[in-house]
Image (cartoon, rainbow, N blue to C red; front, side):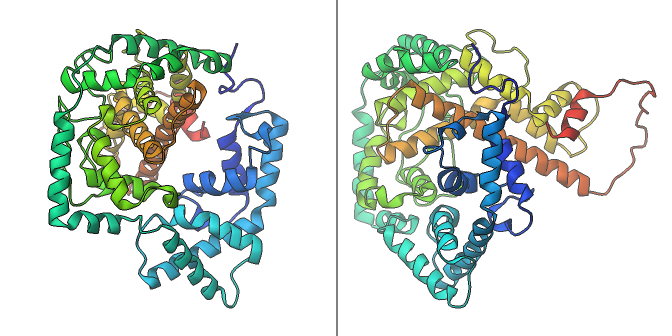
Length: 473
């Protein structure tokens, strides 16, 4: 029986339907769109899906692939929302201007204002006379609702010398009192069973493997094994790193308090300081008012950072084990390098990646004798596909860590699979965007004719990979 996540017959990817309907709205949506005109990920997540599509009330639009009738209805909903979306874009531009004038720097403006801007657009239409007053009130109200749960508040809290010393002592004590190493063999076996069940909705709904893993805290056992002897814990080949990107070291270090963080230079998840862990939570959360206060966040993170896999909740630890099992078999280029242990979940994710034009180009580069015209940029992007587990595990852990901070466990295998598959899609779309950006840069660069480039044979067969790229497949 085919998975409902794979297109059959006339089904169309929901993401593609949204993308094309969005582009048909025309100009005026720049502040809600990426450089190529597609809606931003946060635009889809915060505005299009919850406020326009509303899949909870329209279950026929909740699937990743839509029948022709459902796709047409989705297109109609988005096109019919053109005026409020245009107004939303204008309100967002105005709120950012007011935010800068007020000196507000905490939080991501998209997370904080996107939904409020849509509400303003529905209520008031486009910004008119007096809109500055309304925008100022919204910015101040949003700043108040964070309750001091900001990066600046975190920095101030950790700047106190006495408090820092106490936290360092607590970290050392928590690290020294960790439980002893454990055997992770049972966790690996059950993880494979659960990933096989993810291939069908019936399996994901009724497989007992996930519940058994959570009840026995197999994620905790697995994390304890990674502390001591990571080699072979993932039941993967020696060509994979011990921690699949969760740590750059053989054994994860004891967390330090830290003094700052930068998104561009964040280390691997298990190598991060207390500050870096909470920096990501505060920066990425769209519901900061639901988080504990900064002092409580710090106190909880002190213990969490020394817990197995850096997580408290047993279901989220199990999700890391499942994600590692999936990551070990990720093979976008179809090399067959990690074929043993392949499950239905692997087949679902890998087949989707291999249909990507950006992946097809990378595959062609791995066998092409021609040099990379981008000076190594495209080759670096191809290398990302040779080691896909790093980006996958990093993003998975961050997403699970955010759920842990919000006390949001994964209640069943279907919920866990939604996260695992969603992370795979997110990594794939990020790679697609990087390839497109690189190709745009190359297209804009001056063309230098090669001095001794061999001419293509006149009767040469067309390159199917290049054709796929040109068609946007």
